[in-house]
Amino acid sequence: MAKEVKTKILIVEDDEFLANIYQTKFEIEGFKVFVAGDGEQGLKLAGTKAPEIILLDVLLPKLDGFAVLEQLKKDSTTKDIPVILLTNLGQKEDVQKGLKMGAVDYLIKAHFKPSETVDKVKKVLSCAK
Image (cartoon, rainbow, N blue to C red):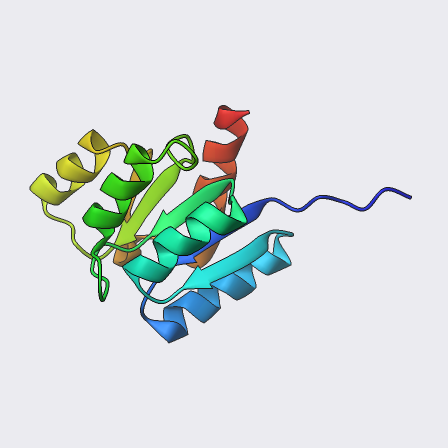
């Protein structure tokens, strides 16, 4: 029997508690999850693990989410990976900046339960196929 290939997701989130919640939720939904605790590690994992989608916090140690997004979009190996910004920065300017830089969506953590975030990710992935 063929082994089911899981959709790979990279979660770049420095809040360990939140990262664990998202990781658990996505694993329950059948995703292969990679977690990075800072921007530099997120960039490294994006390049080596080839995730199908990336959930990216904006406020991160070492490299912030906007810098990570910029690097991802410049790199030929990662530029086509859909990125959803998942942050508590809700100012209109931040949302517009993130979308202009190439993020496919901008979710404010306080407004979305983890299950709703999973639904958003599935929606983005189904549109990308």
